[in-house]
Image (cartoon, rainbow, N blue to C red; front, side, top):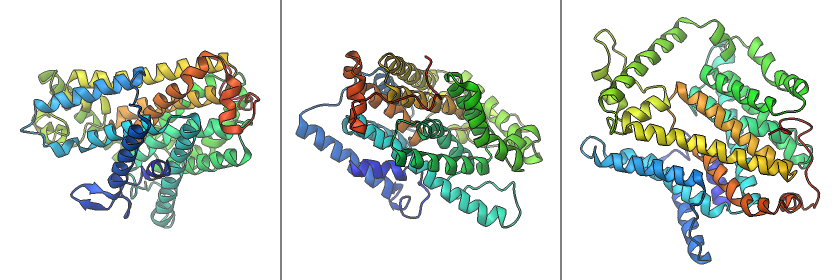
Length: 422
């Protein structure tokens, strides 16, 4: 399992000199590690004599989305090279690896901790870059983008900050784990502030509102969350809050560029509603769908518009369906956990739900259907459902908690925060 945790830990480091180093063409060291994990998963399944299960509605939804992408390729074999589907292949391989290897709650727990560590580590790169080239030059509106482009960085942090927040205040967890989660949370919040992504800030804000609405002690939790977020957002001149309230000339230019791309995407969808223009062809075909006085050529800066424009309405709907199904199924797990008085499971499910909300909003402002940290969260939802289904039927909360703590006592609430209502 160590290679899987290792892969998760380096997943955001695609621009890293070592992990992003290209061995053959676009085949990087990270992809080599992913291939090794995939082969290991297949070997383990063969040894155990168990094929991966696709009973989860989330898994079936993902397979439908994958099938739509594959069928769409047959309509664009001349305009879309097979190499353009390398991301699809790697996501599918990662899916198989996750559902085979993550077959217990303890392993899922370690995967989620590895994801938090991954975003904290890449946050160190973002903070260091800002210190060297922003703070040192008094350029407070400098946005780090060396290891990850700032908007994509904000996207992945929004996925995992809610879970880190919940676990850091869970008095039922070991002290070292709470300190670890709190450290990851603080680093990630600082990095998110420096990234200054308006879309990421909106997604994260709605995710936190969702968390706080589930809490029976809203005033206290709003105060705690406010202490973490508001001071920096108000003090830092380049914060996303300042960019929203007082946009600069370049900010307004970015807004106009997005509107141009969205209009072009709408025209592509209207002309090619069922098969689209081909995966990864949006930027290439965009000049054919803009007005004569518009010379902008870019991505759609909207996951839903670009995916629908490239692979058709069925592709866009199936992707949205995966997000919706994942949210719904995790909500069901959370409801059962509350009935069983299992606070760990209910808190984990709530954190994953909030991460999905953050992604769903942030993805409306950039193209990121292929982001592997997003698929990690979605596949974690599948594993959460798998590893709790049988036990939750018997309402065995004591057995659930003993997996990780070695104790037969149910875990207490999150310091009275983030959970307690369905």
